Length: 101
Image 1 (spheres, rainbow, N blue to C red):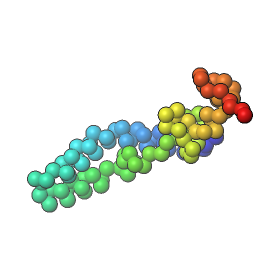
Image 2 (image 1 turned 120 degrees about the vertical axis):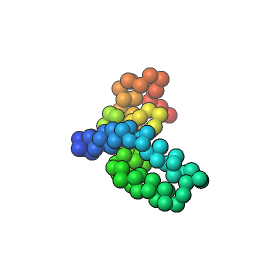
Image 3 (image 1 turned 30 degrees about the vertical axis):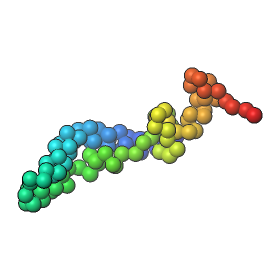
Image 4 (image 1 turned 45 degrees about the vertical axis):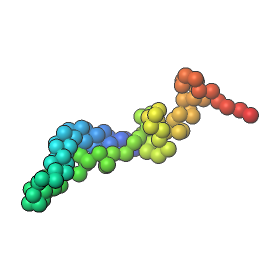
């Protein structure tokens, strides 16, 4: 199980990303405008830089919803390989059976 503080930190980052997503998209769209002057672009990039760092989506890290583990994460299932194996062994994942040969 991951530290509770790390799980909460990721939740906090996700909230910030959601909160500032529209503002970030608007500023980036204006920055891409080829008609904008250099001074306008500098001002826009300064506004973008003043937004909180954790509001950037690249600062997010996928975590397992069962255990909070940050590594070996399956996006489709939203869980780590270890949690997947544990749940599959108990039979809680439909259609997944333990293989033996």
